[in-house]
Image 1 (spheres, rainbow, N blue to C red):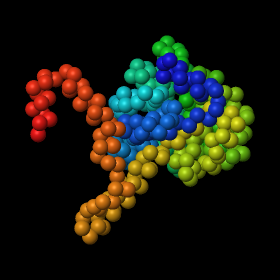
Image 2: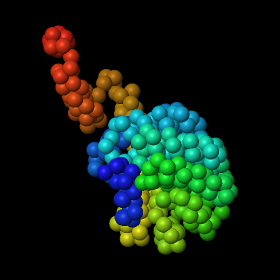
Image 3: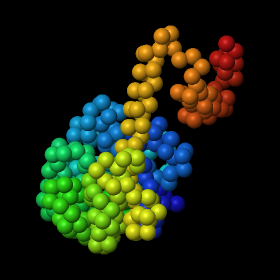
Amino acid sequence: MKQTAILRKAIMERRAMVVPGCHDALSARIIEDCGFEAVQISGFGLAGSLLAKPDVGLVQMKDMIDLTWNIIQAVNIPVMADLDTGGGNAINAAWVTERVITIGAAGMNIEDQVFPKRCGHMAGKEVISAEEMIGKLKACARVRDSLDRDFIINARTDAFAVYGLDEAIRRCQLYLEAGADLVFIDGIRSRADIERAAKEIKGPLSVNLMDAVTGVKTELIPIPELARMGVARVSIPVASIMVMHKALMEFFSALKNSPTGILSGQTSWITSFEDYTTFVGLKDYRQLEEEFLPKEKIQNKYSQ
């Protein structure tokens, strides 16, 4: 089954499928290895890993597409791309949609913020008109329908912070009618708000739980309860980059403060060299060398 069909089937079952966010190919592979059914690319994470900058619209679309390709090649589960605002107007958004479908993405997120956009849990957001966003979605949906009807378009509205829940729900319904397959209200706050959105929006709804530990601005609700509400997808977009930040800060702080300058024997800090190289497939490349390289060359390489 195509990755797009796998993702569409899971979303349409409305069982609150958890889709963590990755910030690079390695974090995507880890998410897959831990048993998750799909992975989304986190614009928040890419801004941090690529630029060491906040998610305020600084990542260029070409970089986003290139990194998306790397991540798709690294895993065997559906990957959802992050288009932010689509790279410009409806024409730009359609072109980027074509690119991500062509390179093998199973779905994408696109949002109704004014460019330059920012993380949905940051202050200072602005949104474009619903009419302009509808134009973007119609253009993207035309591309989807011409290339792969199973491809998922996830339309995000940031109107909750600007205009409130009523407008956010209204926009979600309009976006579904314009061709979106899935919608979500970023920065939504309470259980009551989520329950109301799930009840009133006539189509698949995604809920963003951010790091799954604090929820940042959104109340954390257990996944089984979200499934009972009929939520289709649960995103956890920022956990990978924030876990990485904490782990590296703690390790290098300990290393810097060690009287000896090393952490001899403290193996709890790290994955073993053997485990890591196995995880990233070194043994597979060794087998390829055995199969395709001259035997004399192999013997010389590994006789050291």
